[in-house]
Amino acid sequence: MDRRLQRRYVKLVKAHMGTSSRTAAGPAMLPETATAATAAQAAWRFFNNERVGLQALVEPLRQAGRAGCEESLSDFVLLAHDWSKLDYGSHESKEDTRQLTHQHDIGYELTTSLLVDAQTGSPLAPMEMHVKTADMVHSTSATPPSADAHRLEQLQPLMNAVCDWRLPRRVVHVIDREADSLGHFRQWDAAGHLFLVRCDDRRVRWNDESWLLSEIVEHFDQECLFQDVRQALFQGKPVRQEVAEATVVLHRPHKTRKHGKQRDVSGHPLPVRLVIARLIDEEGWIVAQWTLLTNAVAESADAAQIALWYYWRWRLESFFKLLKSHGQEVEYWQQESGIAITRRLLVAAMACVVAWNLQRQQTPAAEETKRILVRLSGRRMKYGVISTVPALLAGYLVLLSITDLLEHTDYDLRKIKALADNALPFLDTS
Image (cartoon, rainbow, N blue to C red; front, side, top):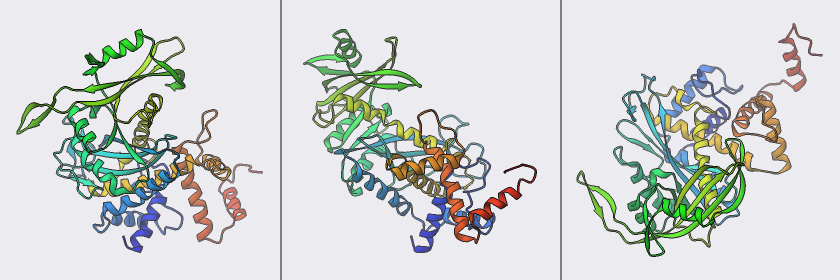
């Protein structure tokens, strides 16, 4: 981007440093902007400018991800992958939407790969994004996937591209059970990629015998092999987390589809670690349980750490929520094409990264900034919670508006206080 577009990018990131209104026609307007029409027109031009490439917009996010890795104390960093629909069924102006599931489920499909600190679980930055429209995929990748490519087929090229990001930590790819595919496990392992995937029940070889994973879990339970590793919260209630693990071999053929027909493929036996993580409530009942497979060696991370890594995959779900109902309200954006939506998503993602960066800092200055932003946001925090990312975003916009007003006008704080008092003539503010 040239300098003029770079300045516009910075202004738009600032405008997204807040929680959006569903009825707003565009990003928030800072005081320096002449009129609302000027701000809306500038945003429209930027999001529809062909010179604003997606790879240029994602690079600041990747720089933030690299910087976050440098701060981490772990030898690893997590890259969580997931898919989320963007519902635009009521947006008649968008002509490139696609049918996602049923005939009334209309919109775009968003694929995101979020970098997460493997030591603390703090989200760092989204490193890759695809937005699938009716006929193409708008992507931050140099080689975008095709519109008819299966979700899992997007992952291998992305994993291969990670080396081009120059991350200073070893990447562990964390994916939900949609990626429970033996054929892909073999491909990823052969390419040297580390993965952590939640899986369903399947038959494996353990101690030179054939077992179902569910039978191994039952054996662990009968032999009291689960270890209590930490206290946790589940739906706001205190629980205990227990883990158990074993090395199993994925030895069966995997299925593939070629020329429209499904066939079995005999692959090499793949040794992986089976980690069972479960949550136990105060009455001793199992309230949640996850069956995890990973090719990360035990010397790199023990079973308790593996369970924690999978738990931190939920940072990506929180990011989707921040883009939607808890912050940016992406499903109410009025841009009329998938490419414009994608450009704005990358701008909004940078605003989220700024808030995450402040959230994970623990210096006295950062803690004071969080408290000020929460006060400016008008949000209430739960007891013991200093701040949340939506509250920080809401407070950021107020703070930026105040500083922008003072910078571009001759008002001082006393004059602003007097203006506020004059605006409330029937209330005694003394």
